Length: 576
Image 1 (tube, one colour):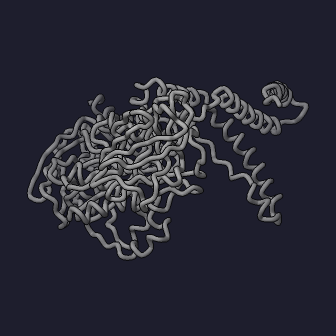
Image 2: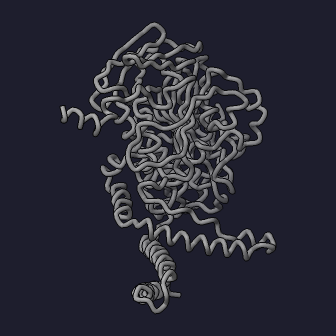
Image 3: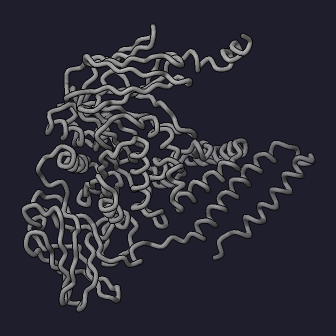
């Protein structure tokens, strides 16, 4: 008897768990049609849980930890809301206004997070948006050290009051599907701006690839040596300096105020810092694992388009396969290729990490099944990494889904490189997705084709459409060409090859040369990071030293350490 009482006291949650489900199983949700939709939650250990929906029922038994999982057939699409009932013994809960239709998961960084109200030109459309059967679940921005089982949020139908806060890309994607298919469409959006693909991938998966495993190991090393008190002291020092700087700037001309530093961020442990390997997977992806859906859409890559990054055609497939394995579902995965950004380049053969990332995105189509890519090199803005045009990216993603998932007959992409063949003094390039025939936007001469011989010296090329799906590329300056590139720039201004539906051709290259990326100076980067860390430690030490009397033993010990670190800091200063 004592043993039983002890067990009750130590583990009450295992024996008396209130019937519950994650937040995304809630009023106004949408279930995937024509599938056995997964529903899960917690109840008393050993309890029989019954799930009922539209005249059908299924049961599951709660395990020793209270967790249970059931599947219930949803049937055909249905825009008339019904109740989904879950009961366990005397406990009962009803989820109201549940629709049946198509469900998609939307994730990525800021261009997926970007909301409808940020583009003024969508004000009229927002005012007219009244789609009771188009709904979105917006996940909050949260971090976690361990995999989470729930995340807050609510389902909201598309109305003029709710659409302003919708992800714009996800809205245009879902809206096109909704209007074309005539069925309810639900989107779960879980995105966070400025974050690399590695943070949305589980650390277990990252550890299977040498380069990403290195990222995980570096973070765990930082975590093991993280000192919250020291970090707080350094932060306090930075805040005092920032406040002093801001106070001194009062009354100064606006031109001077623009150079002011931003407010310091409060310190976070590495394992709770957004953007670090696996952190957002644990907090913002894992809770949804298993939600029955048709597929996922993705807009990210800006955070990985930098010199020295792990190649995106390795990291994106790693994440896709990680998600599919955890969902136990080879669902469709469609993503937006990076839009144009930065000032237009003017010389052929210019190294560019942005264009390289775009091209690596293209390569994923061939290596990872059931993927699709919306080409957007005609959408971007030179001075804004967040182009206001989100309609084209969203609807181009929807084209892939309409064809690949719903059997519609239409072009689903802009022209995609297929083959190249050198002959005499030219190279003939063929394309998929030409439609009724390749075209030049506005009928002008084709631009942004580059060509090179074995000497790897790139020249602007003459390019002419040949037949329905090919382009002949040549240059009087290159007598024996061996390689062609198209739109190879972060902002390939003038790139104008399109298909019969007006969709733009993707960047591509026929070579595998190593002149495509600005080389990262890893030694210099490491030295800079080490010096920054040392500066933080010195500031924290100075703050601690200031708490003691100058003649005290504590002050003397801290001062000695301070002087040693200052000497090292000066020795490590960059040589002029």
